[in-house]
Length: 64
Image 1 (cartoon, rainbow, N blue to C red):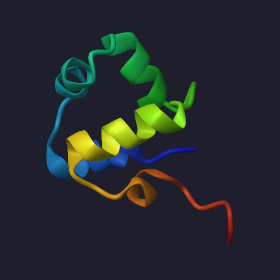
Image 2: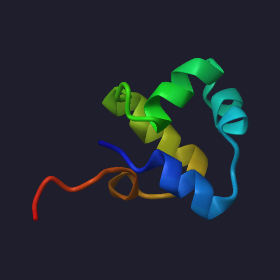
Image 3: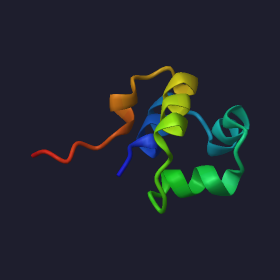
Image 4: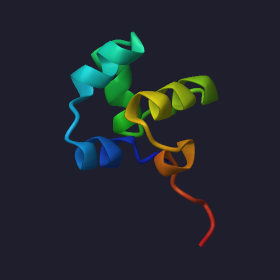
């Protein structure tokens, strides 16, 4: 599970903008945001860089 959608909402950024910056299709980015698929670690790192956040901010902790 990831928090990409929440971070985009917090920053007021659109999925289309993120897709353009990543060089990915809107559908691919949307599947990450809807948690239908998870980005590879390299892509998650790239998303964090584009959004100017720590990679940890994009992840949901599995520990309670």
